[in-house]
Amino acid sequence: MADSQSGCAVRMEGTGGIMALIIDSLEKAFASLKKAVALMESVGPDDTDMADALRDSVAQRFEYTYELACKFIKRQLMAMSATPREYNEMSFRDIMRRAGESGLIPDVQAFFLYRQARNLTSHTYDEDKAEEALGALPGFIADAGFLIQKLKELNGPGND
Image 1 (cartoon, rainbow, N blue to C red):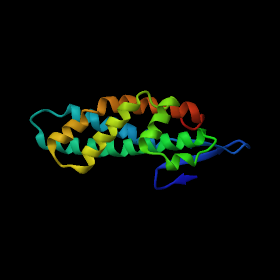
Image 2: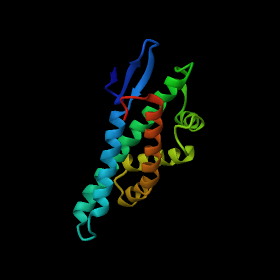
Image 3: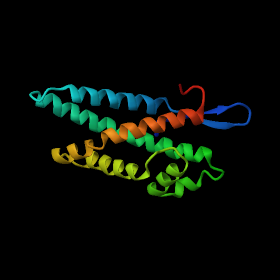
Image 4: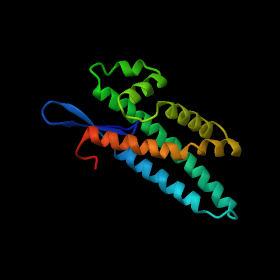
């Protein structure tokens, strides 16, 4: 069962009706982000047009990957909860705190900073602010990789 709006897919496991997340969309977005970052880093200082285009691409891929990561965090917390609907009423900050407590993310405060960076990239065309936001990328890439590994561990076969 796929949720076309969120990019999250769920499958039923065994006869107990246990829901498991299929994280292919997050993995693909993450791979695309890493590829764009590598391309951006490989561009020479003289090719400013290419550097600008790649920076914009990286910013867009960061936004998308970040949004997917947050949706998968919420979905995983709901799947692990005896009262999943409570997550629909929670604030972003409370969901991230629960994610940290559950071991889905290594650093709750970092996810608050990634949200600020995401907001900078999506709501401004200021080159300096875009560069500032992209400064969060190394940490985000490490933490998103951590999240993906945790989601694979929790959701088993089909996510390798």
